Amino acid sequence: MANSTLTLKRLGIDTYHEAVLYMNRNCHVCRSEGFVAQSRVQVTLGDRHLIATLNVVASQMLEECEASLSESAWLALGAQEGSQIHVGHPDPLESVSALRAKVYGQRLGDAAWREIVTDIVNGHYSNLHLAALVTACAGDRMDADETLSLTRAMVETGERLTWQSPVVVDKHCVGGLPGNRTTLIVVPIVAAAGLIIPKTSSRAITSPAGTADTMEVMAPVGLDVKQMRRVVESEGGCIVWGGNVRLSPADDLLIRVERPLDFDSEGHLVASVLSKKIAAGSTHVVIDMPVGPTAKVRSVEAARALRERFETVGAALGISVDVQVSDGSQPVGRGIGPALEARDVLAVLRREADAPDDLRERALNLAAHVLEMSPQVKAGTGARMAAQILDSGRAWTKFLAICEAQGGFREPQVAPLTRTIVSQHTGECVAVDNRRIAQVAKLAGAPLSRAAGVDLHVRLGQRVERGAALYTIHAEAPGERDYALSFATHHPDIVRVESR
Image 1 (spheres, one colour):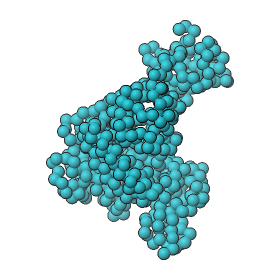
Image 2 (tube, one colour):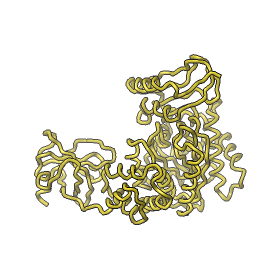
Image 3 (cartoon, helix red, strand yellow):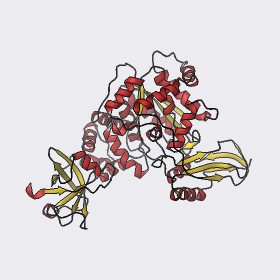
């Protein structure tokens, strides 16, 4: 292997989680092994190895005897400047035949999904492989049996937590409804009631903010399993980013590819949610499923099918799933974007007079269903219990305690730049396009720019005067503000006002 040895030079290239190897095009390894750009290569450093995608460098950035790694690969191998690596051909991937079969519309069984997921977790799949899998599974291309197989494989390839309680609860929203940040209110209510709720949340996939993005505005979320367990054992609940606890690592890698593709798969959605809940040790889960013309789930029929998929897969894996269909016709609260959504959450928890009523009521309804999953809570009493915990201030106290246990509470920041979109005529607000108003928030910089987003000023059915504010764009940079403003200008019916 002497001829396959190269000296590492750190270039500091961020490819997110993708493992990439960089080599000079005249490198003796490239020439002797027949490697070209996009080749999959095995990189070995000491007793560690990984599979990486080769990028060929034509400049003198790297000498012929040097190589570099993307930051994620560098950290995975524990590399140091000047380390010696060996580069060679990886073993053929047996699971690629199963992937190919799925691309051509065939259904896969337990063994095939286990092979695919194992190769994903071991870093053997490139982004091209992952994109092919995500595309092949998009829409309704996975049946219930395949969803069950994928969910089981995801659970088996990650860590799994256990808790000293027969009932461990959780709550999840399928997404697609801007501002629907009820989790940050439900968790402290439920934890204050004495139940165990180890909440792992995702960052935004196709939205302006995920629960983890919003929570991170107020407290650290990048806890590892040991830290997460300490918080839950201390406070009864947590709100942490799931990507750092490796409870379903295959899902985190698939989400990485789903984000730029900007679509979701129904089968992967169910597998993603339930694999993480099961891995986190949950026994009972409430699923919030908003339904509306511009939500992720757009019809009663689609909601019924997705609900059945959740409940069927959950039952097969021994977890109780309660799907609550909710109104998805317009955003929840006022803020869309991490800091703006955090502001709304704090207003509800602090019982402020101008707190968004819809956010409060949705959170209380979901908290009631979660509470009633406990055998200690009589059916029909959850709503009153949830309201008492919130109105007494116990939920706010518990939220602060959870934040402190996770690393400390901080107030949300405020964006320095704003621009308000006003109504061009008098009338009634008859529609709010969830997807397009979310797009405005994303173009303004959310979720990476934490204070960026949109503040919505009107609700469906509200009387609106000509010149009245419809929504305000918040941005941290002029370019992002102008980008969002241009989109808003070209789509004047994002908030539609009609004369009545």
